[in-house]
Structures are given as structure tokens and as C-alpha cells.
Length: 54
Image 1: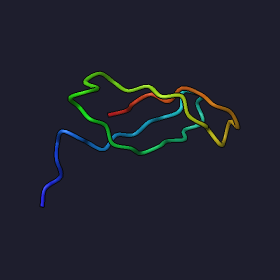
Image 2 (image 1 turned 90 degrees about the vertical axis):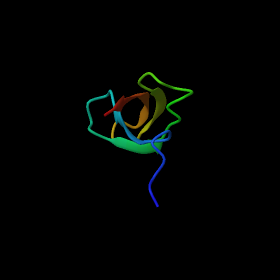
Image 3 (image 1 turned 45 degrees about the vertical axis):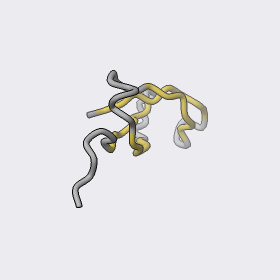
Image 4 (image 1 turned 45 degrees about the horizontal axis):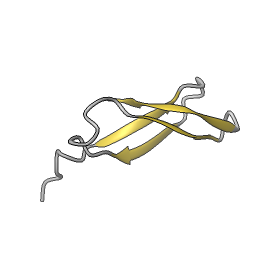
């Protein structure tokens, strides 16, 4: 069974320069642009913006 391309798996990479990533899914219909979320970076030990990487 094929995965739905409407909800692809994306990587969110930390903007703090630590190289830490989160892996999640997004709805391409609701969020066609690149996603940016503020999440916790355990290496930097603070909340930083994470940007979508393709």
C-alpha cells in the first residue's frame, strides 16, 4: 500500500546550528509553503525555530 503524497514526511532542522532534527508529517493542502515551528532543541537546551528541510 502506497503512502499518500498529500501528507509527506518532512524533516525539521534546528536553526541554532546544532544539527538536531525532528521528523513529522504535514498536510500539503493546508501548508503548501515550508513549515517553521518553534520547538525544543535538547543540544542547545532552549526553544528555537525549526525550519522544514526537503
